[in-house]
Length: 375
Length: 230
Image 1 (cartoon, each protein chain N blue to C red):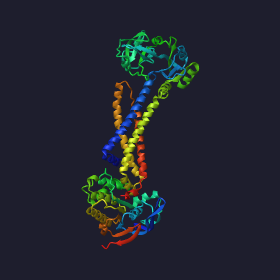
Image 2 (image 1 turned 60 degrees about the vertical axis):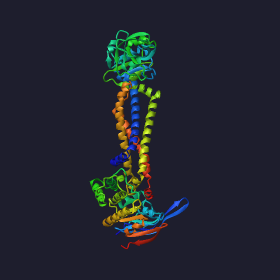
Image 3 (image 1 turned 90 degrees about the horizontal axis):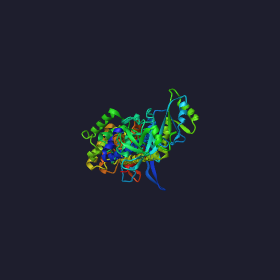
Image 4 (image 1 turned 135 degrees about the horizontal axis):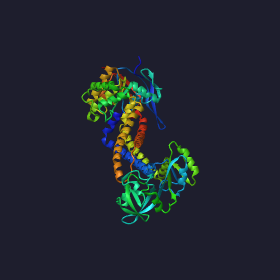
């Protein structure tokens, strides 16, 4: 039946090409929207996911990574005193202003960490190294921010919160969901730069547990011992951050809506062409029914047409998407293509095209072979 | 031995709004193996309705229809495809061939729908197309065949599955006289050799001599049955 369906599709090349383009358009859009959404989600929690540490202690009711508020630094010692905690690090994430070379300011996100320990700092350097942030007014910027901040070079100076900092390194892969450039400094410098943090506060404490220490049990103990803060496992905080951007800002709904619309558009295009083709061949299908073919036998031809459209459209869309990934990268965006995304889109495409075939199936079911006797 | 088709007081009435229309008045017919029967009558005489009932496509309103001794008049609509699959093939005026498939593939598809697959089906399709004189053109698409050749493919599709009953509705309607005659002679020859029962609804009097028997209808009523003198 697959072969017969293919022959029917190949017979009317123009119509088949239009259908195929429709599927490619719809599936390409689904790939694009899903990939961009996942890219944004990965970006939103990129520092959490790349920071070694099992537990994140944040201010009470923190919404996400970017908008966490400061809390007293002395709680760090309480975290360290917990027997299951092997080590703990303080991390500052705060909003600041950088003066542009050609005038004006740009809002940035400062990440202050202990350069000697490296926890919370950049995980991949293009030039320089994180240790150079020690003992001075030094900063590292990410290469994704270079367009926004001007063509910064190692050794350049910039004013951050009215204090002159020297760029000592360029990191790689640290993009922010908010699109604000991320600038790494030492923990102490970040405390001094951002007035609302102050010298006795931190924004996060990241704890690493001893081998064999129970995650849930330790979290519960920390939660009981620490007042005025929240305690999350790394995965929980990563999820909370992603969920905030996806759900509470409406970004996720917007992407979902586009995916649903793409799905419906694809379904309509495939459905319409398969239906037209079925109607054109209604007498032939009727003849098959007249000679005793079951509906199921004819459904197989119709569904095969849908599946061929789905598979061809999917493969072409996937190839286009793979090429687009490089394009996205070049313009500083992330398009996520993973094997499970590919599988999910394939399933969605098959569902889309098969559902489209149902209208034709209904028509076939209702064919009265008596129409064959009407000239 | 049971006859291919036997009817007793078979009739069909339609409800057209509030009016009851009688398409076929009570008819008693018995059709034999190897017999080619012509169903004659003007348009609206009921011959197509009778053919549809004999082909288990329409259900009679009253009376009995027996196919090889099985009373099928009382069967549910859903049970009729199985009867058609086992006993009946059709030939239509418009050929109804898939334009995307070659003559060979159209015949093969007909065989598949009757449950015959694999190499056996391919050999059978090729053999029957050879028999209808399309050996050289069996791999042509319908658009590349003449009207007569297309109807030969349709005849081959009907004959290929060994269905003992062949029902044809105006099979020469889209053909010129010479081609129409050729197709009918071919059908008759194959029916006689293979002991099929062939019923042809037509109003083409020029092919009347081909039939073993002719049934004349008017206003839904059988008004005469004539046996061929040849």
